Amino acid sequence: DQQVKQNSPSLSVQEGRISILNCDYTNSMFDYFLWYKKYPAEGPTFLISISSIKDKNEDGRFTVFLNKSAKHLSLHIVPSQPGDSAVYFCAASDTQGAQKLVFGQGTRLTINP
Amino acid sequence: DTGVSQDPRHKITKRGQNVTFRCDPISEHNRLYWYRQTLGQGPEFLTYFQNEAQLEKSRLLSDRFSAERPKGSFSTLEIQRTEQGDSAMYLCASRRTGNTEAFFGQGTRLTVV
Image (cartoon, rainbow over all chains, first blue to last red):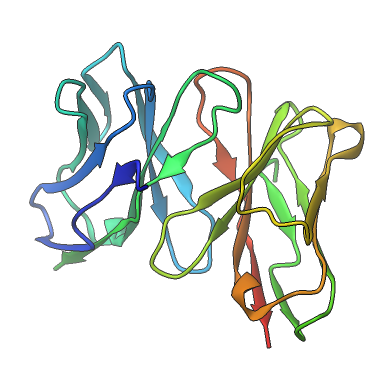
């Protein structure tokens, strides 16, 4: 039962353009969502998060949008830079119990010069 | 460096041997998590500590796995009688209570031959 899904295994974007990564979830108890970036042989690095009481959160070049009715969130990166090339994971948690993170399968983003 | 630290970074072991991994969380974080990541997948939750108490374990954590967090500081994850299917990246993360981001260590890559 995949509660968090990233349906695009890979995405290729030209440098300077916008990168949009998508994520869907099924568990309506999730109320906190995060995006992580991961380079090979390293642990995930936190990028940005959003609480379910908001529909948008912005931090520099990164913006996360949350559509609760559709159970969908997206990460926008603009402008995209070569250093953004990595695997991006969407994660979700709820406020009950362990607040463990449930991750999607990841999307490999490649920024082309 | 005040981030999450994991040791060792890499471990190669023969099938049937026992292995132990260590995680040192960020000092003021009372919550500590272990995750496992296999190729092409997102990290999957294994177990969670609040201070020294192990409060939740995933069904992924078979009887061969045990984790401890004595005195609520560092944590260890032991795998007994390793199997080839245990080969994965083992990630440790820590966070404060509440809707806050989790910080991950660089992981321990286990290869069982």
